[in-house]
Image 1 (cartoon, rainbow, N blue to C red):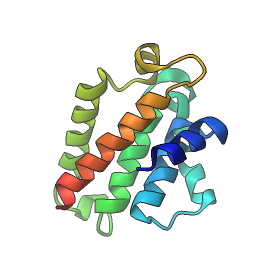
Image 2 (cartoon, rainbow, N blue to C red):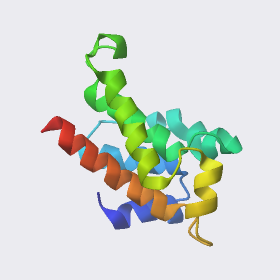
Image 3 (cartoon, rainbow, N blue to C red):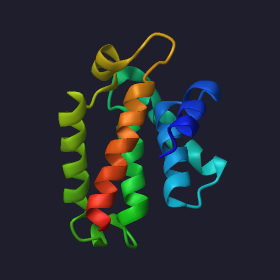
Image 4 (cartoon, one colour):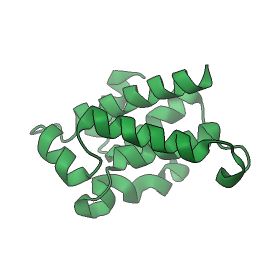
Length: 133
């Protein structure tokens, strides 16, 4: 992860948490995504706009799909368990998975959830490294 690039994406370019994670993941793993493709996760930001599941978490799971699914999810051995494992690790690292609760604990005035987004990306990188070998 390039922390400065991620920070610029999130704060200066005003992308939401999910978009920022996906854009950084695209750089890290050369996913071949276009700016238009990133719109697929735009609605995840702000916990689907209503404080539900964290958009950064949702984008991380989307990246896992791109990196680990072969053909389709149901035909990819252990993919469901892989996602479950990541979500449990995310919850343990941040104390929950819902945007509203995470925002209350991790948001900083003037930076929104930057630290959570950065830590989410680090968690994703470590997780992928561990599972890809």
